[in-house]
Image (cartoon, rainbow, N blue to C red; front, top):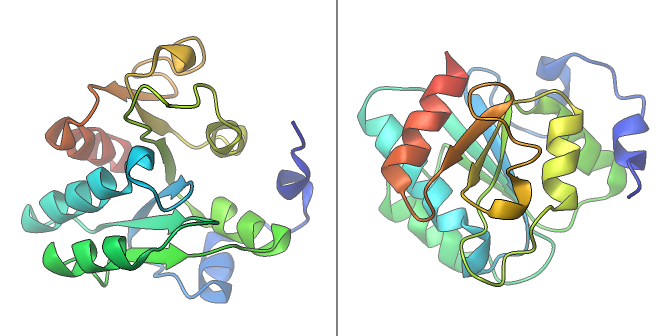
Length: 171
């Protein structure tokens, strides 16, 4: 693994990084990195943000995907009424990916099929920044994600449990 993106000297001020990437300063932002494919769980994250909005919480998501068509996910964000809370990026330069990762408050890995990649570079990058994480119950990651210590493990496809985990991380 190459953690070069995490070694970039970007400063530590989240507000400055969020301004550079045109992300809101006032939202609790959780990120998810992965291709715009159903198995990456972007839909669950968008729906969880919708649930949190309905409950009056100021949470948002940043979804970075290098490949695939993000139209489906943008439309889902509109359907859920969270198009102003879900921020999409396609393929980013190493510099911009570093800026996004360092501007987040939490990170997620929501792979939800038997084809899940197990321990992913994306989750390692998120954890290396010291942010809490939430994952779907993917056995390959149980050794690194410790419930309540560095993150939360929720049942696969359980959007309500996901929204509760995001809320816990935001408090």
